[in-house]
Image (cartoon, rainbow, N blue to C red):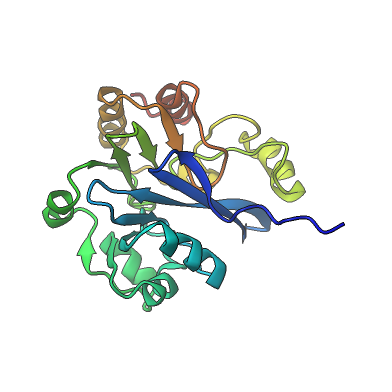
Length: 236
């Protein structure tokens, strides 16, 4: 009996937010990596943390509308963006300048911290994680759906993850709880700056946290995120 493969995109918020997952190997373990698609107020689409696009994924995204923005959230989540920019040639690529140093193939049209991006997409608030230049991450908050989008600010392993990550997560303290990634924990150069950045999240009404490496968090998402950072000495 032939079964139908699961959809590439899963709808997280009806008519507004979708996500897809793919396996990625990092440091000898296989993680899940998530790409999100947000429908903006003008009907256009923003792709957060673009995946290397397959024909099927491109077709499914294109059926939702016009992709106008490709957003690289930190200096690590850039690998799929050059191919995604080819697949969606009309999209503007937004990224931190630090990502270009890691990927010569990456074209950056607008810096992630540029006022032009904030003006063009006012329904999204940017929350930069200061004090951690190793990561150089900026979170995006979508007002209409009360959804906070991050990449590597926290991660979590679960029962349905690959055995390599389940094993490593038990050793690194990431098993079934939100945690700061092991490679980020020792790279905080300014704890006061990081603390100020994280405190800004308390002013937002966050219904769900969408991260790259772990299930969507819809139970006390901000409190769980802040608790993870408190465990590595950053109060917020």
